[in-house]
Length: 325
Ligand code: SER
Image (cartoon, rainbow, N blue to C red; front, side, top):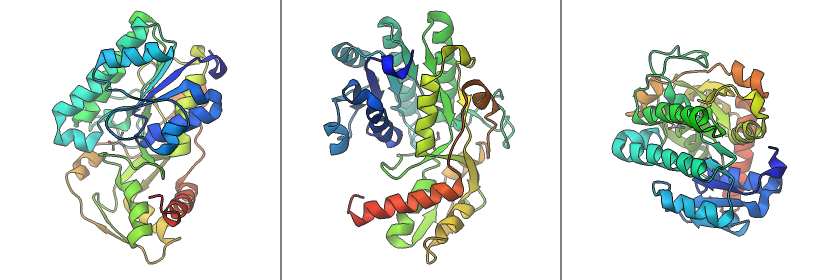
């Protein structure tokens, strides 16, 4: 099915880091009134609520999802609502409840209502110390150390099961850390790569919670949205993996990022005070091999460290100047 034929799209987690921009991007792509943004507790921005429908949805309540799906005749769901890795370690029970019950409910509603397609993001957190940390292959041993990673592995297997057992067209990518200027991430291990920009512009100073030489895979928001939309628009015959695809964009250390920012803000100083999130970062890959996604559905990112940093500084400086942050 091409994007043009998609009737109605529901985006859960639409007030979050990825959802707030992906909803706008899908609306821009011609789905304006047919993209229903769903948030849970957080009030939507004016931009989000004024550009199309908005609903409060608790994804741990299946009936709640079902009602919205029926009300808008939804046929596609981007299910982004989740608890991230750092908050997950502080509250594993909450992470399991939101991530697993939420996904199970979305898949069940999709099966019951015979929805056309579901997108669900997995993460580099699926890998653990048994997988090689450099150019981690698509098919690796998945024994994560965080509850967040556990919910992502279980989620991948559940998506794969719903595809095999019920024929549900569910698609997924393993996102690296996502960097963006619109909505800050909430409670992840890769959040430092976003916070550093805000603090560099605001205070010329940042205390980073991972060590200077910590390397993790990252991706800039335009590529993050492209990965989701490209995969969702790909012909089904090209999708051989119904767990989740590795998608790579860039890898750098916290120190390299700080030095790249210093090219624009020479007085910027970064200190390193690792906390509990260091252990999480050390259990994740430094770079991942996305050969399969490139070959099967043509995945190709546009941004690297240099172009991402330039754009982030420009966009955020503009937002700070307009008092939008
Ligand atoms: N960015 C996420 C986190 O840090 C990883 O998927 O939790």
